[in-house]
Image 1 (cartoon, rainbow, N blue to C red):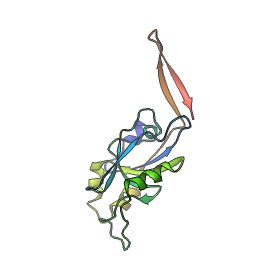
Image 2 (image 1 turned 90 degrees about the vertical axis):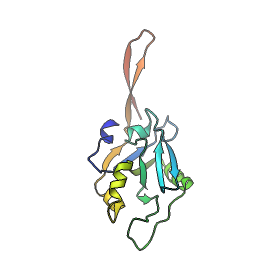
Image 3 (image 1 turned 180 degrees about the vertical axis):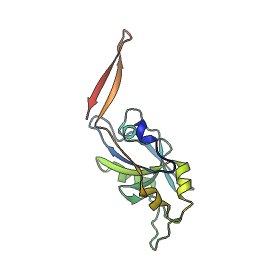
Image 4 (image 1 turned 120 degrees about the horizontal axis):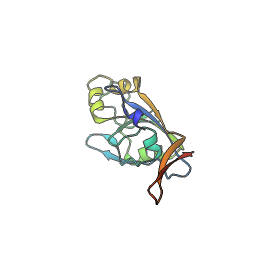
Length: 153
């Protein structure tokens, strides 16, 4: 979803991903960087619910269903949230038919971290993205012609 990927400067995205019945999972992989305390999106599959929902390779996941996934060492709160493990984050994402991910690209996250409460700042006015219930596929025939097929989920 190209339109959703285009954000204002320093704007997070709230990606509401919905599983499709004929697709396995959401169509992205997740890597956890313990040194940076980040859960990073990798390998967003073409024509997947994740691509349709505005997820980009390199996105850093800040919230899963409104729950923080990283240690809030830079957030001034009385209760400090412990970083969730890779397995816990994957479980939170996979356990339901839809999931909301608050994500930011690394350059946006670096900007948010300059402030006292970066998670609140990132959550303030995110660009909202949602998995489409339909997508278009170009089908190429043997004779070289192409036709567009609209698929609904």
